[in-house]
Image (tube, rainbow, N blue to C red):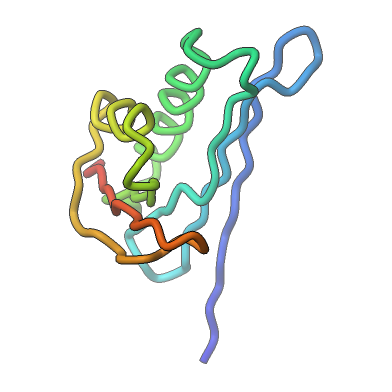
Length: 113
């Protein structure tokens, strides 16, 4: 069995320093992209950097005629992140029970492109 993964890594910089990033994975032959990792440095959170980063990356993805759905997992107890994702258009599709090492569930969220 062969899997051809493609990955992208986008960085947000301020004064030549990384203040946030997003990594994205796709698999050849599918119409799905997965946000694998996303973070904004704590000193720069809640300043719109994450929203701008997601907005720019989603613009790039929307130009890909093969990708029609993007997804991600978020900790069930991360209320702020869940609200953030909902505000930019993600919706809950399922729950992965005890997904994280500490037993916390993951909320699976998608966005249609």
